[in-house]
Amino acid sequence: MRPQDFDLDLVRAFVVVSETRNFTQAAARLHRTQSAISMKIKRLEEQVGERLFERDTTNVKLTSIGERFVGIARRLIEAHEDAFFALNQSFATGKLTLATSETYASCLLPPILSEVRKTFPNIEMEIRCGHSWKMLESMDTEDIDLVIATKYPPRRDGEPLGTERLMWVCRHDSDVYLATPLPLAVFPDGCLYRRAGIAALDAEQREWRISYTSLNHEGLLAAVDSGSAVSIMIESAVNEKHRVLLPNDGFPALAATEIELYSRRMGSSPVAKHVSETIRKHFAARRCERELRDIETMTYPVIPQRRTTRTVASDPAKHVAPLVAHNQ
Image (cartoon, rainbow, N blue to C red; front, side, top):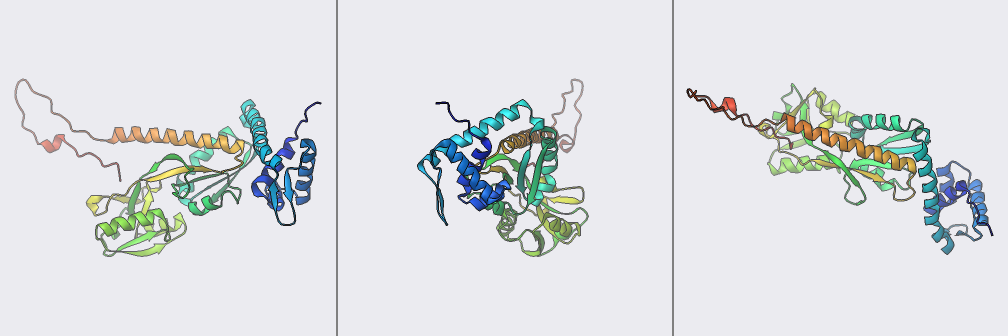
């Protein structure tokens, strides 16, 4: 008997139903009607020769054959799509949903999107911005493929991409940083930057007050650029309008924040896998650039050359410059 050739369109429908355990949700994800999805599953069951789902008016669950077929189905789809990508990435199509915070979107995403567009000019990308932890908690149910976020301890499947130094900043010509209590512009309670900054100020026994809160990065920028508050930003968000406040200004150093890449736990598409690789390469190159820049900008003690004819008295301060602190 000749083996059946599985229709990949039917196999894709099966995988989505197995993930959602709901025909209505599967239909919405695949942009089909519920009846169309039901028909696809029926046709696939005819090809397999076995029932793949047990379903009634309220529940959908895999049969024992269905549970065995899930892994096979995913490998079939992956092999098919990987072969297509290997032949010509530029013709790859599909939709990718990438989520991140507003801060990362404005400061980190532009060069990443440029690289993705060069490699995959025909894919459609949806960019969602919001609180990272909320998107991570809902990424499997809201059809989010990738999330670039600050490390989120409840999830241990994040892939480290790099770090960003946290900086105290105010407007470059403002003396607001001298105020007591210190006026702060921060994200709402729960933000890791806010928590780290307040803990550091409390440890220094410095008085502070919350002057501005905003859900959006642009809101905090407005408060800082008005000259009426100090905020905490990642290094990539600091611009020429800002003054970075250092320990000698009375501001404690803050630990760097870790950035991670999160993927859907189930059903990650080939597009998402290849875009993930582009993101990894971008951050790897970025780390190298920063390391080189730090080496180049670090000032080392200068050892005066010995004179064979006479000794010239000199001011040591002219020869030795302080090391620049790079861990702010």
